[in-house]
Image (cartoon, rainbow, N blue to C red; front, top):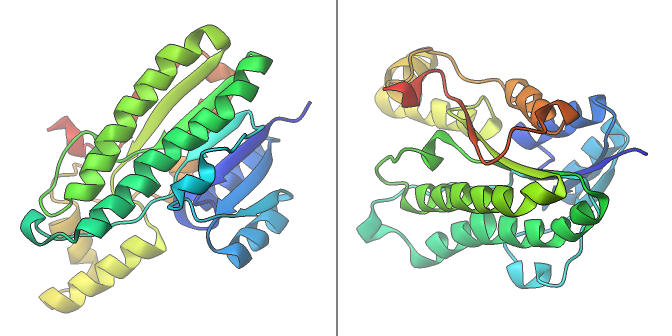
Length: 244
């Protein structure tokens, strides 16, 4: 029987790379994204299906039931500001989308996984799930919460054949990051490659951006039968940032 995977934020960036990898590995992939057209395009590409949804509307998720074998919580946004200037609604939005929604989706998916005696929860966290940076209070708080949620899910799911893990990338080459690089280059008046090495990756030993397909490959492993003993952990992929 073909296993089904749901990938949130699946229409672009890291989510799209994970969707492509899981489809390549033979899973039926549901591309969940608020951009309905982009979700439809990628679903058509990978032979899956699209689910147009705004996961920040968490009230709509409370009665949800998901019949999937793999759930990838990837959807996220970023807002940057000092705490004393941070817009409260922006803080709440990030908590809803990046912590409350994963909880509700896990809650919706576990009954099916428990009934089948097998399941994989993959939470796309961040190096910021383990470390902090100034001006990212909402993002860092949500990712730290996601780490705890993932570990509790691992403990509860163990006797049912369900694993739960986080992937913790540093800066990944996505459209969002590419825009940040261009903006920083313009602001500082330096070439974009210098922005990557001297500003974004100052704490990384390897001065390269992570490619989305690298994250996809790790997700593919965590979704496989080979990863049955891997649970409750955080897989860091950050070029050595958190080694210091």
